[in-house]
Image (cartoon, rainbow, N blue to C red; front, side):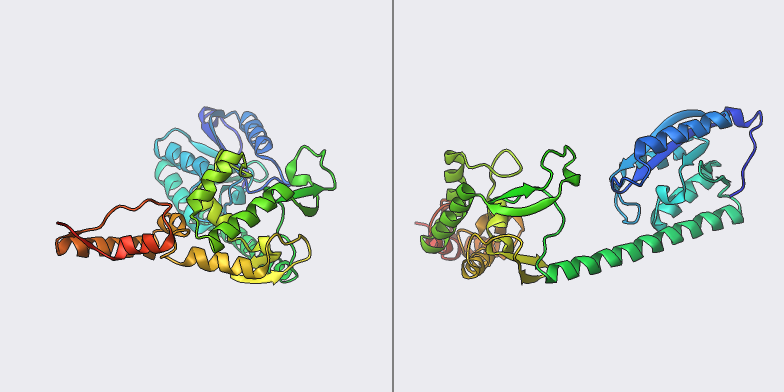
Length: 343
C-alpha cells in the first residue's frame, strides 16, 4: 500500500476506527490496543476520529453477523466517515462476501481505507481494489488451512477419547484444576473430572424413573427444583436441558464426535453404556411421554403427527381430549391418536 502524505485537505477528514479479534491470544493485539493505535494513527495524520467500531470474539472468516462491522457499513453509507482505519485488512474481514460489501460502500461514498501498520488504499482504483481483494483471499486461505488443521487435531483427540478444551463444568462432575486460583478461566489447566456424588445420584435416579417407571421429564424437573438441585448454567431447569444432559454420551464415559462415540479414560462413567443407549432411544421415540419436551422444542414428528391427527378428527366431527403433560406413555399416545366421539 502506498503512504499518502498529510496536507491541508486531509486534516478535515473524519475517521472511523475498526478493530476485531476472533479470540484472546496472548500474542495477538487486543481490541482496545487496536482502537488506541488506530486513534493515534488518525492524530498523526491530522484526522478527527468521529466513531469507533469493534467486534471482540468474532471470526472474520465465517459469514456471520458482526454488529461492529454492520455499524461501520451503515456509517459509510450514511456519509459519516471519510476514512476507515484498521490494523490490517485481515482485521476487517477474511471472507469475500463482507469484503465486497465494504468495497462497494467505500467506492460509492469515496471512503479511503488506511492501515496503521501499512498505508492507504483507494478502492476506487484498479490497484487498490486488486490489493484489497487479494489480501482478503490470502487471509481467507490462511483461516481455511488453520481450520482444517484444527478439525484434524480434534478428530485425532476424539478417537483417543480425550476431552475437547475447557468450557463450563459438566453436571454430574467436579472439575479439578492444576491452577484453580487463576482468575482467567481460559488459562486454568484441567487435571481431571471427578464424580459429584449428589448430582450423579440424581442422574441415576432420574434414569431409573424414566426408564423403569415411565415418569415424564416434567416430573424430574419439578422434583429437582423442589430438592434444590440446580443446573450448572441458568437459573432453572428446562425439560430440553434435562433431555440434552441425560442423553449426553459423556455420562457413560464416552467421547462423542461427528456422530461417533469413543471410550475414554479421562473421566469416569456415571451410568453404564446400556442405560445411556436406552435413554437416547427413549428421547428419540416420538410416542414417549418422556420425549415430548424434546419433541416440541425441535418441531419433530410427534407434533407434526399430532397436528395431522387433530385435523383428521375435526374433519369427521370428533374431538381429542386434552391430556396432562405428565401422563403415562400409553395414555398420551392414546389421547393423541385415538379420536373420541362427541355426544
